[in-house]
Length: 177
Image (cartoon, rainbow, N blue to C red; front, side):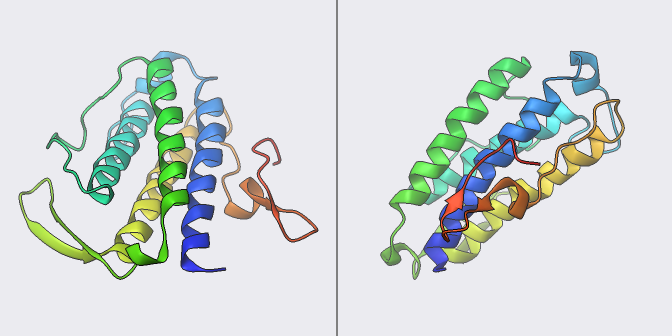
């Protein structure tokens, strides 16, 4: 598997893991989604908003733009269904971005200003790895917060979300536990 193949796999995993996570979160009443919990972004809903915000910031940087500086705890969508629709659109955007990546992007660096106003120049492969790791990290926090509810968290293991086919290809069946 090449590095580009790996990033495309991570984009597909991101979409499928989000489907599972949002399907599970949809079973919760709004009060449970927004209940204050001991977490960076204070609630399941707040953490889901943060993941979306982070994805938008990084995709803007990857595409040569900048993202407006907002607090990293900004609530982009108060309504869960609107957040879910935005998540689905962003996941499609991430997969399209990953599909367009080619070898010429890998030796590049990206200069950006973070939310603290600091300027960085970082290599694209490191930033892409961080991008996908950031999503997984915060999905793990949501997974943990779900254990504090009556709704069991979904299986989010990569090899269970994106299952290999016997012929060597990949089967992407989000319903497989």
